[in-house]
Image (tube, rainbow, N blue to C red; front, side, top):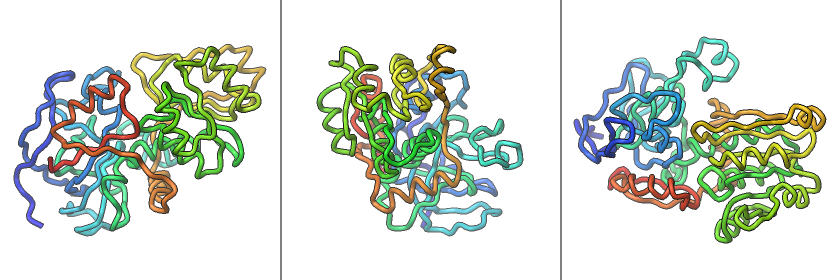
Length: 348
C-alpha cells in the first residue's frame, strides 16, 4: 500500500481554539511504533475535555485528538515484532508506558507516571494515519467491522474494567448512571453479558426505551423521579450491589453513594472537571461501602473487552459522520443530545 506524504486531520493549536480540518504530514513511526491507516474513530467525551483543556493535565499543542481509532497496519518500526502489514489494529487511550515501574509490573500500566496518551499527549486518531506503540496497540481480529469496533477501544474497555472493579456476582444488581450515553449504552450490555441485573439511570423517555432495548431490566428517569434514591432502592430491593458512574453529573455521583446497597461498591468513571464526591464517615463505615475509581483497562482487559464484541455479546449503537463534522459532534455532546456513540469516517 502506497503511503501518502500528507493526510486529512482535525487539529487545534490552542485549547478551545478552532478545530481545523486541514492537510498535515503523515507521521513516521518510531522504531517501537506501528503506522495505522485509521478508517474510523469513535468520539469520546474525553476528546471534548482535551480540546477545551479543562482537566488538570495539560495536552500537547498543537494536537490531533481521538483515541478510538480502528484501522489497518501499513508500516512497522524497525524494532516491532508480532505485527504484520495488513493486520487490524486499534489506537486506544493508553498509547504507551515505561513497562518497568511498579504500576506497569503489576498490570496497572495506565497509572504509569510516564504514560503516553493518544489524543492528549500523543497525536491521536482524528487523522487518516496515526502512530501507536506496538505493545499497547489493540489487536483487532481481521474481518471485524472497523466502524462498529472503534468505540470498544475506549468506551468498551473502560466500562468493562469498571464492571470488573465493582467485583459483582452474577444475579446481583448494578446501577448504571448515564445508561443511554456512549459509555453507558455499552456498560448496560457488558453488565448483562456478565450476568448482572441492570437498572439504568438517565433523563427522558427516549433514553429509557433505548437503555431497556440494550438489556436494562429497569430504568429511572431523573427528570421525572421525585426521589431517585428511594426509587432505586425500591426497584433493587435495598439498593444495587454496584454502581457504575459513567455520567458527568456530580449530583448523580453523590446520589450513588446514598443509594448503594450496604457492602456495595460505587465506581467512579466519568470525569467532570472540578467535581467531588462527599461520603459520610459514619454511613460509609456502618454500611461498609466501597468507593473506587476506575480509569482504563490494561492489555488483558482490552483483549477481553474486544472478545465480548467479537462474540456478538456487545454491539455498539453508532452513528457515522465525516471527520470534517467533528465540531458538530462536540456541540451535541455538550448539549447532552447523543444516544450511543458517534464515529467519524476519516475519509470524509
